[in-house]
Length: 144
Image (cartoon, rainbow, N blue to C red):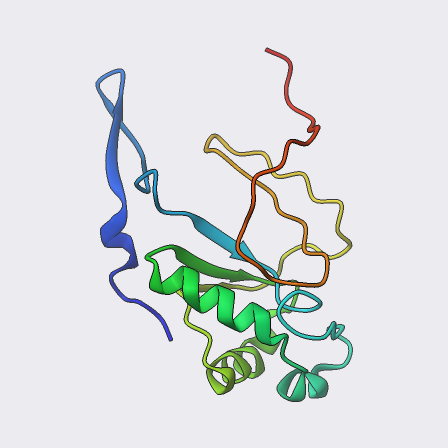
């Protein structure tokens, strides 16, 4: 299920008199959520026939749809390829996931370092979806 008005949340931004990339309101999160091993059992791209019958992680469905209903942006970002889009969309629909975007082709292998001019927060999935809690952690940043 896709919300066609998701871009309506974006707010124009001006810096030094010039328009720059728009931003979401502070209270809206832009969730990028992996699929395999995160919202369902881990299925490698080499076994696409299993993608339609992947075991759902029910807590992932509940929390993702809750975030969607609260007005947050849900984007599934997966290492599955464009060849797997149809299976992936069918599986998401079958289980009732609400989402705004589906991005295919995330690099495989983990150890992700995301560099962006917008605020980025990372949350490692460790086997159970819950509401998010605040914790202090050590991170790598660019030198000032």
